[in-house]
Length: 477
Ligand code: SF4
Image (cartoon, helix red, strand yellow):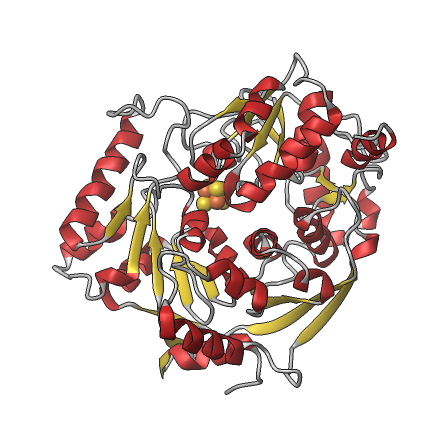
């Protein structure tokens, strides 16, 4: 079946067979693994005496548990050290490439694969991590999978999965200064809700998306999962090809031209049929901040926390829980809410363009991190760290009171030593504001763009980055 969408074309090209269950056995082009969701899968392979038939199609890195300060081995955290030892052994035994700290290629799994040219248009990509949707920015169909599915893919390079419906999310127009890709996706989530995309793949399109860099598109696709969609993607175009050209694993010489022709043919056609289309206007999107306990609890920075009556009735219990957990009240302005911690990083916003923009707004502001706030910046990969240091961004950050760390997931999930304490509130460029997400069972998270996190760190509270940029422009900055 094909309705001339990229999703359907890529699906049909990878379908091995239709299963009696109604699902499809889908061939997987690229399998990404990390230290947290792979050990049990390898243990299951050993139990069943299975091998990995296509080890060259699996790539491993370590990201979740890696300390961002002292990386000397053995790690102080015994469990983290155990996970490191396990992935080293598993990759050695099954012949899988592993990018470790110090290799120059380590980092968050969803950052390193694109930067090395491993993620390419038309691929099927899976990883035992929810935010695998990131790779859809290249026109790949990319899913997060569970541990038993990691085992299945290691053992067969295929996956049993149900076909999805396709919703086109059309964002037209131009973003205003101080409004970023993160604001677009938080706005989409707020509008379509966290469950609105269940059963769908999201195709992001429109003039706003067309004008975005690959890094911005990755931010958008990364959070498709927060809207319930199994994956999100953008059709490959000249921006995609320019990003990939010359990267280590991208096709070379004659193979490059053939690849570009092939990739172009995979894009959704002008006559593509979608199950649903939702339209957004870029100019109406504001810098967006979450106030609650789900990524769809976002509001414009100038707005007040909404009354529960503005949500569907079946959401009221969650909304009440959110007011209570966050200790925020309906009608209260989000601007001015004091923060304790500022975190810039993660697979959503830990790329070089995120760090450049954070540095730019920090310089426009000119101040230092508020005395009450602990602020730290974690590059998404070792390559991002090297690039940032070559540009002097680390010097800008440290001169303004931010800590500059080594690559990893860090406080996105806080499986390493970077954790909130008690009821602390963080301004965070990550992707989830669930209860306890950042390492304290009572800690609180406000999601926003990296530029907004930087300004919150300097002000000690949620503030509008547009005010800082406008003031700097007025002063000739
Ligand atoms: S940065 Fe966060 S969301 Fe991304 S892979 Fe790491 S823990 Fe998962």
